[in-house]
Image (cartoon, rainbow, N blue to C red; front, side, top):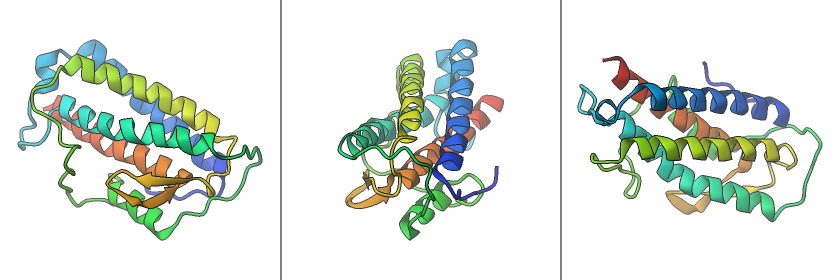
Length: 187
């Protein structure tokens, strides 16, 4: 999956819906096949466990899902397909988190660093609930002008991304950490 920028709202939302559904299916499978001990095992490279990866993503979802809903609730519906214009900040955020182009490791910001002791199955359940909410938000986003709705970024609320960029950023960030978690399960 190479880094792609999309020309229209429909193209972007179709891609993001498919990727989110794939992520949801993967975590549902883990929920049914992996036990808590496996989900809490630290990476052999001393990185995060599967549960920590998903707890980190849950913290981001807590912020962004609410922000997406608020952003759409205060804007008028715009049912037409329209071209997508990423800002330089949006492109930078997406590129830096993309699993293929964002090779740099980042230190998680305070408040987004998960504990090592977690209720692993509850963390997965919460992630699954977030993904279902995200799928609904993506479906609702079809009715809005993605270039007009601004979403403050979680780590610096004085900066904002357009809704399309923010959705892409969140979902590609999830993909990065789900791939990380998957590597832990393969060891």
